[in-house]
Length: 554
Image: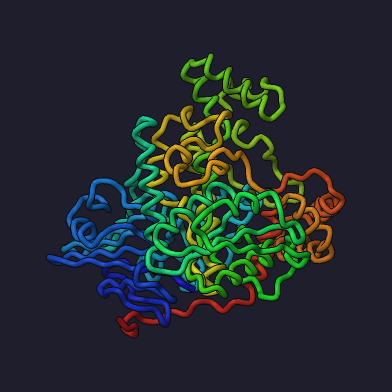
């Protein structure tokens, strides 16, 4: 398991066994197989700084950041997804989290002091904590917004994204925000998006063997940008026996890549048990139910020499906005624009515009965002209410953070196979650029992902710039449930049911309906199944062992 962390100054000095010491007093460590390019340090005049994760900062940038009041020395955010740790002459330690939660950080209390790290599971082992039942109940209700002040592990708290955790030598700990959205014009943001993507991909692809998904415009874009720094193996998955059309037709038009195709057989259907056991992760991984195909694709690129696999995850969250800005327009009295956008969206979806207009006029961002959300019939545990986002910008930020936190578990799955999984669309500099554009300028039904295309579309073939969708595999999920129904029924009556969190009867009924092809609201069902798979994975995993930090090696 690859992660990093440290202790508060003056507190108990503990560290995971086998970790590498970055500095001591207080200890800062890196555990697992870390590439040198993902651990950068600087030091001078009694100050120390460390950056963990893919980061485009130069050594000069790091030296400047030693003395700056914020986490960055260049005034504007560095490209990449990373956490910054800085210790001043007084000994106080600052930890800056990334704005997106691509690298989530957590804290726990131990013997009166604070220990922090990027693995909630490892920190839970320090205090002997088990699963946080309240967090799990919230996850089962809505996996996008599970209990923001809790983690999956009891006694382990998340540090909010875009925050500064200050650990003082006096023993106190405080959290403040260092990042907030700014406001820029569309014309200002286009080059910023281009720079953030170019530099974010470079920070991951330069000097290593790289592979990439090549399917929709998001993954194809990062593949093409990565090819500017060396050979790229482009992988496109397709149903077995279907060798033309869909994603493959578009993928074959992309020049400069070493193309590879991955046929999806019956053994790759969702929920089909894989030859490899599902690895334990900090929380339920989105790809748990796809582990047979996900692991197969990762192993296929690893067998071809890839060390880093790029994905397009997060691209939809950034560049494909739902019509939540309608409530913003109504709130500001821009009725003509609101009515026009509501009508165009309804025509695109072949729906009546009146539910959209009603939701906008009532200020119901939740109904514009995810109107299908209801409490699943099988959830029996009480849940704490979570305030919904209030406007379009808050929706974009919350959606991207939710996707990034979940994807961190997929990164752990890939790491268990010896492969780096890289998601450039979760970079903080990219979020900072995109969210600064007025929401109504990000939204369009006439053009597909206009901000992305305007920023980097010149690197893509014309067919990709005008493509309005990508391949979907919704039918595979129905077939996967039908094929694996006996196995899934055992999950329905498993650990969640034993803990009193779900009623297996309604859950089994829902699974039978899916197997028969019934129309399905997938998010709550997938939450229950992936949570059950995750509980099985961590049950057989040995907990992280901790020892006094003085026993560590540099």
